[in-house]
Image (cartoon, rainbow, N blue to C red; front, top):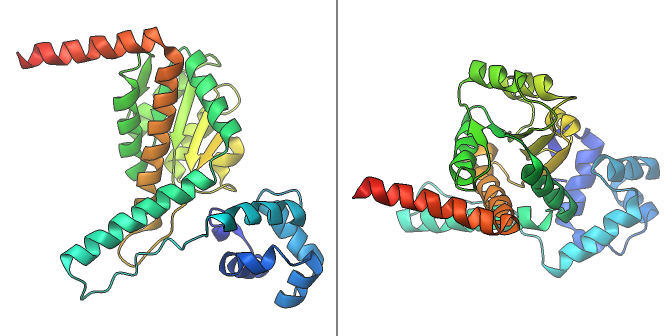
Length: 272
């Protein structure tokens, strides 16, 4: 719901607000009761459920019931201008922890496994991102270059387009974009789409990137007074990439271990 919120209509946002605020109530409501509470048509509630990825209202209630077991918490720093440095630091750390936990709760195992399978079978892997996401893409390259797989990353927009044009169905593109809608990112995706498998890491399930990707992995974050939503999402994106990298290395077994060993030896020689 948080991921799709900006793409929803006013009535749908009202439904989302109510569900996020009263999950315990909603799991005991029929679709008719919820529609009455919000003064909307049952069909509006049903369409809302489908818009956020559920087959219907019952599927939404099942997901909510699982979430209520570990009560949802708003990801909100609530920082005041007169907070001490320690109070601000503690609130930032708390927000980051909640961002990671919320992202973990929506992680789809099937999508994660599919992403790992694509990476392990790829001839070449390239990480793409623009603006703040370019830094995340570079961090992903920094991790995966240790794996022994053929990985690349370019930070400059024209270089990304040129490199994307040379990729084939045997390669894999990992595209990182908080909004999933930035022009630079979509320019690259349009070059890749249709002949290069795309793994997307984004915050929005209904974004143009999500629609064009073969596999999508989602983060959850919220904007606050002092930090944009995109800034808050970085910690979740990094955590997702850490998880994927670790699974890939375990699946590679001895080959991954040998690649890591060679990398460590080369760095230790430079220090001598």
